[in-house]
Each structure stands twice: as C-alpha cells, then as structure tokens.
Image (spheres, rainbow, N blue to C red):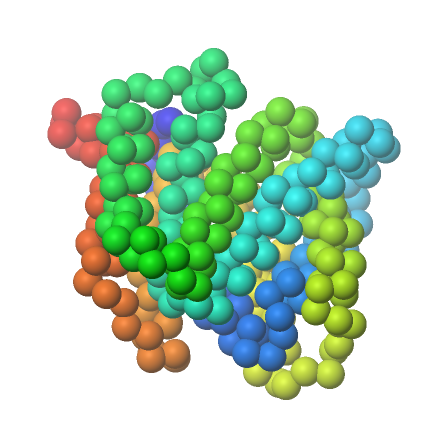
Length: 300
C-alpha cells in the first residue's frame, strides 16, 4: 500500500470521518437501552439505505439491472452489515464501547490475512507478517486470554465483536471479487438494501414488531448512527479515499478507538482496564507496520 501526501482538507475530512465513526459506538449503546440489538441494526440499515438511494437518484447514477449484481448486494449486505453490525451491537450489551472500538480495529488485521489467502497479489510480505503478528498480540492483550477461560457473557461478547471483524474482512474479499466495477455509491446503497432485506424480518421475528414510538434519546441515537455514521460516513469515506488513498485511511482506524474511549468515559462513565490500552498500543503499532509507514520513517 502506498501513501499520498495529505492536504489540510484531506486531514480535516479524515479526522471528521474518525470522529463520526468513533461516535457511532456511543450512539448504538444509547439505543440499546430501549431497543434490541437486531432492531437497532434494522433501523441502521433501513434509514441509511433510504438516504443513499435518495442521493443516487439525485446524482443521476444508473442502477444495475443484472440479477447477479443484486445477488452480490445481498451477500455483501450480509457480510458487511447484517452479521458484523448484529454481533457488535449484541457485544456492546456486555462490554464497554471503548473496548468494542479497540477490537473493531482488528478488522484490518483479518483483512490482510484473508486477502493473502484469496488473492495472489496480496501476499504476506515481511512487514505485513510482523504487523499481523503484533495485531493479534494486541488483541490478545486487550481481551486478556485468561478471561476467555471463564467463558462468561463478557468473554462471549468480545468473541462476538471479533467475529464481526472477521465478517468485515470477508466482505472486503467479496466486494473486490464482485463489486469493483460499480460506482461506490451504488455499491453502498445496494449493500444496505441487501442487509435491510435480511435485518427487518430477522429483527421482527427475534425481537418483535419494530416500533417508532421511542424515547427522544433513542430516536436521536438511531438518527446519528443510521444517517450520519452510516449513510453520511459511507459518502465521506469515498471522498477521503480519493483524496488520501487507502494507506492513509489506516490512520482512521487508529483514531476511532481513542474517540470512542473518550466518549464512553464522559457520557457512560466507562473505565477500561490498563490491559485494554496496552493491547490497543500494540495493535496500533502492528497496523502502522502493516502499511509500511514505520519502515518508511526508519529508512528516511
């Protein structure tokens, strides 16, 4: 992966994207006080889908007609939204928002490993292998492997969040294989359509009819994570990707966790164990080595 030099505008939008996604963990946790995890995800995908299709119509983009493409949207919605959103929302019922955001950063680690398995041009170079090993070490420290031996709800919640990151990684593989030729806005809207088709009936069956008669705090939380942190963030993501390049977006992964930790401490009174911070530091080092940033600094 290569990095572009970042303009002040690119830095500002990268920071904004990190702030938006960092805040999503807090808003999801607030919504979970009144709605179930599957219902929270159904709200997230449905409202974000509507907003993105409005944007697509306003932009005049042509819709794909191939049934194969719409089938790919359904699979993408399952892998990139339905499974990870549900696992992480359920996990947040039992672990802190800050810890959820730290474990979420492992997405990049799993992504590199799976890319090396499925694509010949994504082989594990030395720096990637070192970065992956440090990433897994950081996750192990953050979780505390001894805690997993207890196998209680907290341990299961952490495993669920990690399962979500693995699903994200598989989604990246699927997107590269099936959706590369599509405009990213169409791909995002189609993906959210697929996940909505899955999540609305799933939430209805598992948690009962979906109601809009909710407390104001819940409505505001859903509006934030569905409209701003999903639909809006997807559109901003592609702007930042064009300006900053994929390598620099790794910085976004590192910025999200501190924001989520701070918001969790201020608004929810959360306090993480020292091992969580140490684990994130090791994981962050692994991510920086993974994209070659530290090696380039050393060579300079």
